[in-house]
Length: 301
Image (cartoon, rainbow, N blue to C red; front, side, top):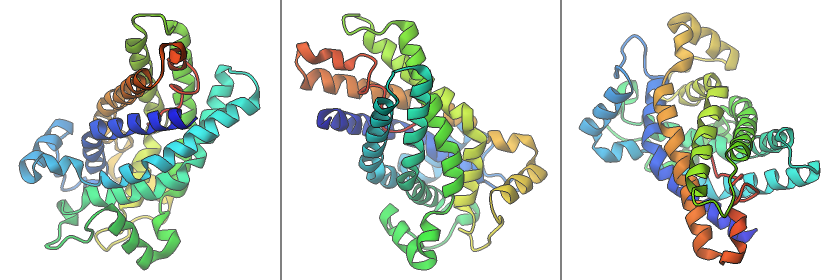
């Protein structure tokens, strides 16, 4: 269990490093002012950030997901594995239920982490531009939010995060289980790693597509009030105002960058996990890399 957990953490860290630039673009596109948009699309956003803020601008707020990585992995690994064992059989339905349970529990860490990430990603941009930075880093961001707004403040967006993560993780594990069964991932197969990478990448895409509109609402709620003005009174109010002002397309804002991120993030995660386990375990124990608790418990989406 300890080795499996460590492998997941290392793999998850690789996934964060690969995927964070795409996440920064996604958040900027999701929350930008529709009347005065800064970016025309995904690639223009990439170009603008690099030109105005250098490549490091793409990694704003990365400290938050890195800090929360270990805790999220611990929750996801423990809850998914124990739930699957409690359910008795390794079936597609049980994979979905176990994944949903893991997604729901890890919201405790995921929500504050993403709040800090979102605030850091928006700092110094557009209507959020200030001469002095409000936050030095992700930890400083959470501390200042807590001092100003208390526990409720650092858990802003918790309900929308729960609505997003619960079914999303369920679909992730369900898709991965079905893909690995269909592709016939066996340890003896010389193509097992490409198959696992493809399965993981596609699972990430499916999981994001399943709840993406909720993610748009979550980002808007967590970004709300940064400029000193609060626009939304809750989830339904955010949905109503966003739809009224921008139409149904608002719920697909940043989807391109999210899907571009989903595949390589999960590919990097699974590649790192697989290589790590191959290095750490003997040939006799290499079967742990087959579809099972190890590979079926990624660190994040």
